[in-house]
Each structure stands twice: as C-alpha cells, then as structure tokens.
Length: 232
Image (cartoon, rainbow, N blue to C red; front, side, top):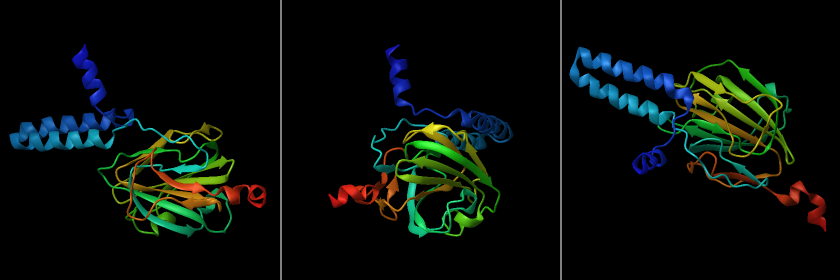
C-alpha cells in the first residue's frame, strides 16, 4: 500500500480529455509493432508524449485579487496594447494584452487568471496560423471568455495554432471562477491572450517562462483602482 501511495503521489495526473487520445496512440503502437517491431517503440514514445501533453498537475495559486495569474504554461510571447476581440463588445480602446505561447511539450490546461463571474463566452471560427504571430490574435480560430471582476472586465482568449485544431472550454456563462481554476484546454500547441483594464501593470517580461496557475502576469495598481485612497 505504501508503494502504491508513493507512485500515486509521484505521477502527474492526466486530464480525462486525454484518455481517448492516449488509448488511440497505444493501439497504434501495437499495430505498428505488429507490422514492424522497431515501430512499436516509436509508438510507445508517442503514447508517453500524448500522456504528458494532457498532464494536469496541481498548482499553488496566489490568493490575491490584486494579482493576475498566468492562464497557461508557456512562454510570454507578447506584452502590448491591443484592441480586444470585437465579439466581446469591449469597445475600440486598446487594453493591455499579455500573450502566453504554448508549444507541444507544455501542459495545455487553461486556468482563470482572476476571480470573478463569467459574463460571456464567444467562439469564433478562423484560420490556423502560427500562434506566435501577432496577427493570430485577429485571424485565428478562438474562444473568448469575459470575466467581470472588481477591477473591471478581464478577457481571456484561447487561440488555435498551426497544430492546435480543437479548443475545449467547459466553463459556462454566469459561473463564478477563482484564480487558477481550470476552465479549458487546447489541442495541440497554441496561445492564450489576456486583456486587462487600465489599472493593470505587467509583472513579467517577453521571453519569460510562465507556469499556469502560479506565475504572476500582472498586478493592479491600487492608486488607479482606488484614486480616493491615492489622494488621501
């Protein structure tokens, strides 16, 4: 029993969304091995990669409404002012946009960057350009979540890429979410944009590695959020 408990604690959990893909890879490994034995080992390696892709590790999320937490594992690929997707109806004024690019080796579970209520979820069909390109935010297939918070509206956009062909979102409009809560994933390799209100200030740099549910992407400037406090 002690050995089983040790193994359970050591192995990273796999999200249920990945079960059927892992099974498909495993069956393919057996079939390939039947055709030519060396291919079996390549199939097993691919199966292990598939299981790693759908890993769903526990994360320790900072509990603080002044913080914006990374929605995904990956590399911070962009920090800029950009107009949010029109389908969210946030207007034409640019907002702070922080992008996290996920390659095929990253964990692809997506997490809420802030605490609040999901007021809308809008899916938009589009292209499958390289998700690292800036125009991918406007041209690629995407799924947009708008979260209403005490600091203002925060948008989270799941963006498909060259390899990613399926955006999964199990959150629903009207639901309350907390920072670090899982809300979806993207298969296989993609990007997540976070659009933040005026009071937000970046806490990361381009090229920095983000850990979903743990890395602090931005902080809300209390002097801007509560100007009366600043004056007093």
